[in-house]
Amino acid sequence: MITTHVLDIAKGTPAIGITVILEMRHADDWWPVGRGSTDSDGRLATLTDNRPLKPGTYRLTFDLGDYHRQEGLSVPFFPEAKVTFNIRDTDRDYHVPLLISPYGYSTYRGA
Image 1 (tube, rainbow, N blue to C red):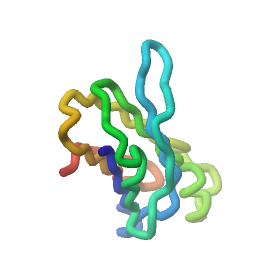
Image 2 (image 1 turned 120 degrees about the vertical axis):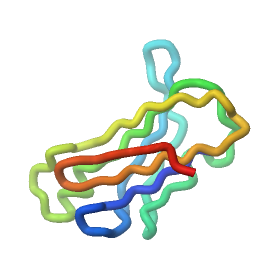
Image 3 (image 1 turned 180 degrees about the horizontal axis):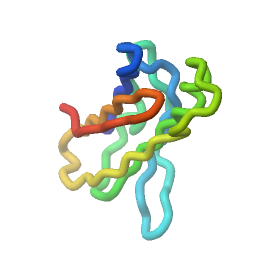
Image 4 (image 1 turned 45 degrees about the vertical axis):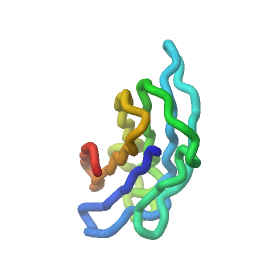
């Protein structure tokens, strides 16, 4: 399972309603795997819908532009964040959080 959690560190709150797209690399293309929006706690756990994972390279794309516009920033500096990562052990769960502010973001491998 691949999950994510988005926190707005400028406000100190979960980032609600951010659209997230999960894709898997196939040669030079990216194939869609899942899509959803962060909930009231900034979490999204339905990207893989309990389908088994395959080893490979995955990418999460976070739509930060809409979120920041709703928060009053008319021209967001980062319209999106793309996080690319590898999965080898498909028996594990993967949690990839994103910390955002209007002018920066950071990610890490969560537990």
